[in-house]
Image 1 (cartoon, helix red, strand yellow):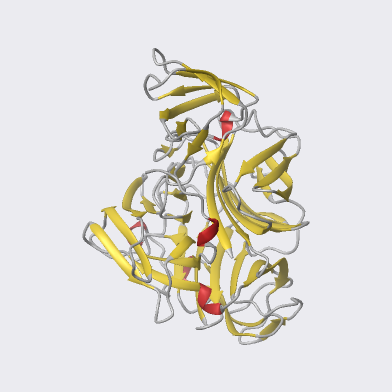
Image 2 (image 1 turned 135 degrees about the horizontal axis):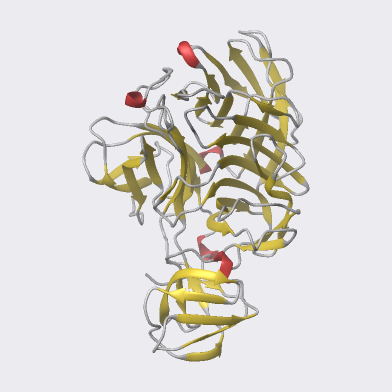
Length: 500
């Protein structure tokens, strides 16, 4: 089993009726499936965007020829009220629109797997001015693993169970996302969003659910983080509907709900079977109240993770519905990453020209749009050329300073941050508050309020202990709660070395 995480910005001028390649690690192998977190944004890394009128955030699952996604769309708040929408699709991998669905900002109809890359096929679209799509993409490969992607429905009556048994393997870990809609439905009204995970051995599960009120002058939000269910839909006045996996069998799972789901409400799933169930772990995160490194073990059969993915929040009480800013209802984060940012080198497309008397880099046959601010460019023998500031096109970019070297028509390699958090929110119960979004360069970022960062931590290079270590640079006086799913790397011999 091999997993990796890639950060990618899809630019408006790049992804209109076009096929866009996302490069994975060299020698990554045959891709079995991928998960994408995406959000509309118009801000530099680690800055907040409050300028776009509409903000879409979604979770997409893909295997060969199967794509499912859940989306919520928020309109920027005003005293006259806002509109919001929730949607489900099994026809698109990415969908971002206006809240009335009349304008398509981004739509990816398929994600095909090639050697060491994923090809995203985008349809015709009309992005918002300066609106881009920031994404965290997690992928898995390996002949020894099985991946299943699809959708199913919840049982309707409280206390009843529903069995999903259409896989041809026993899953070791299951991810579930839902927007509380029926199949291929878009609903303008109060929005729900839930994303969760369950492991088979030991049987553990966690999720985070968010509710956003539609079309009122002071928009309310409600949030709930749980380590007893895989899906939860909170609402105002403290009510909640949950679903929990009670057992994982030979071909699927049994899920029981508390509270009443609407008829034919669907959820999407991404299920994996590995060599052993101990190759996967679930960590319930309680953030520290002091800065510095914080180590978390992964149990008696733990391991050093290759990648982690999960959710962050400002929630301060688990398994309780919270409906005010003071208890963290404003928003949530989707996070993913590895501990070895800038230690793996990727082959660059085409050739580049650079000069030590300037910061401009030009390319021939290049794809500079994939570079974030902070990407580092190197010669093929590992000498640093410079750090990217901005890409103005696929063949033109600017470095943060003059290039350190001079070269004409040279092949090159690059390295990047490989961890981050996508955050979305709206200052709870505040008239005229603005919807915000952010892509952070840290694995674990919690945003809140107007907005501001209240918790921030980076996944650091592991030592010999079985677990993961996060170095927190910003903390809150109270612990905040989230969850992380961790994946063991079983193909260290296939790693490509890099530089620090």
